[in-house]
Length: 547
Image 1 (cartoon, rainbow, N blue to C red):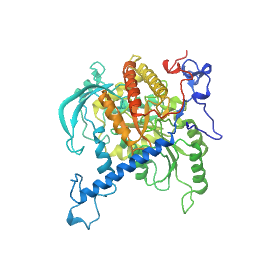
Image 2: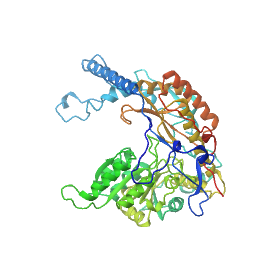
Image 3: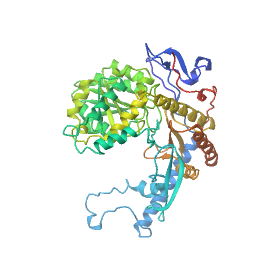
Image 4: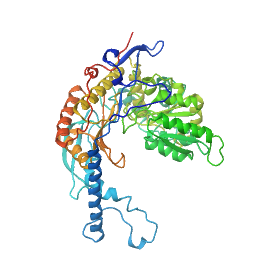
């Protein structure tokens, strides 16, 4: 059955199935406007589906893992008696009484399960990772322990795995002219932190542009997206503080929380009852043992969850944050640029005032075709981080060509380049997302997430089917990303598709055609739900400007 959301006394939002077709103006937008002067139709959040697989699928998945685990123990026995060569690092005999560097059980999965299917990951590419790309052919002579390149190339495979949401990972010379000019002017590296002699004018221009784009007071940028989370969270909270973290938060958020020294409690994904219960307990009980009030309570969530394709329930979380006087940290790595009528992320999508989010974080690696990240919010917050963040004080400043690429892409999105190319790409991404998700549901695949999310996880479940799916799709010249345990729950292995504005309708139709074939061939259509009660919704452009 499909899992739906509930929110107690907080405001409930109707999903798509709760709306009549005539209540939706062409493509799911209502006539009510967001506010004065926006000129954009207000919208209700789309349906978010987490359909459960039939029981036999879970049983067969566990059975499959059980079989490969038993064979793994058999192979370990053969290695221990010298009948099979062990390729992984091992302790030397003279160090057997030392504390082991390599935990045998921790490496069991790598030795006996992952290595057998390693050819489906880390594939080398030899072209621009745009909507199509070229892959270097490789083979293994020792069951994937090592690979050798054949010299051949798989040309023009459709790229369904890169986070190239708006298609700015491109090599068009006309579009990249300003990037080339800045590279000639500044070079490719700075060789210093911004607090020493690495602060360039384009860095300050970018930060002002980011603040204007997000409609906040100030922002600061960093050269690495992962470090934007992991190195800034410890500067914001510490001992005596409480972090309430969504159970599906990214590793960078988890690492930052652990490094901070704050107490961490995890609430169920997008579950407002779970979050409110923890907030109440935190307020009423205070810190362990002393019961003193918490110095800070920080709620950490993501805009789009990259493995589930789900959207944060931002209005409800903001309501809880205000009710219990907590702080909110919003990671928009996957949502900035990718959702919202003008690409300003989930705050725009849900019509939430950006000032209601205390710390706005995002990266430039997805929608902007570059690298790095940002923290944005009030000027006091940014000024504090400039002198207290390890990522600001010790990290090398962002590369000038990367900085200019972000400026170029952001100006294009905002229309400051004098064109409508940016808004066209945002609309195209939304159209592709709606179309692709709707067609997959019609075919009978179980997909997770929100209908507005360009991250589309397709549930494959069984370990053998995951491997077969990736290989079958590559044979059809389609590059996909497959993910399994321990990155996902053991019974929820999946393929993760990332839509792009650069994908044409012909490309998507080709992928869908092969998906249909492979789904039938491998018996991957597990959905028991029926869709398309309003079949024309996904055929229209997803954003409609109202005069």
